[in-house]
Length: 201
Image (cartoon, rainbow, N blue to C red; front, side, top):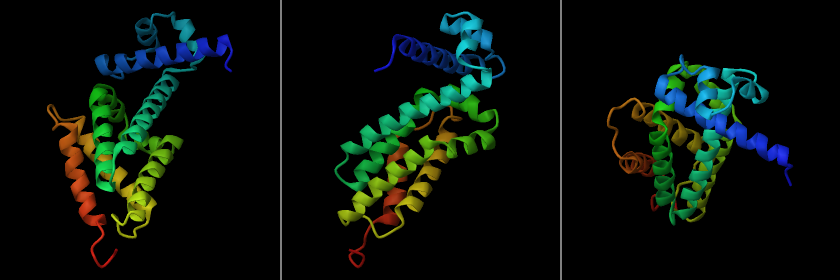
């Protein structure tokens, strides 16, 4: 059981990360100073430094926490589908909706150095967990005879890559389609490639 001090620290870190997301979304990365983040969080600048050594550390933790929230949402969405196609569409729709809700933050975050930030996310445990979750959805579909015998992990990486590119487009569009529209589009694209024919079953 966490101590009172640990609970307070976790609460403060969460509040600072939430404030950082709002500041970056509203003012941009250049103006997302530790001072601005502290003001948004309602704490002194010195308090922020008790928990984070730098602004970059705050942003890194903010993205890590956001992706953690995203993965929990995707796990819940994937569990609701009764077929491979349904599960995949629900996961994709939840993913697109999450980035829509936080699009200002992620648009600016990725614009700060898309290749390096993307590489960092791909190396994270959260990314590996996401790939494993997609791979398990594919394995379940294969066991039910809905999916042909493909390498689940490689297929999951391909799906994640396609979703990522759609997300990058969506967060830079003024009026992207509803999350469900792009989710259905990608589901159909993927499913027609993985669908088991009579000969494969």
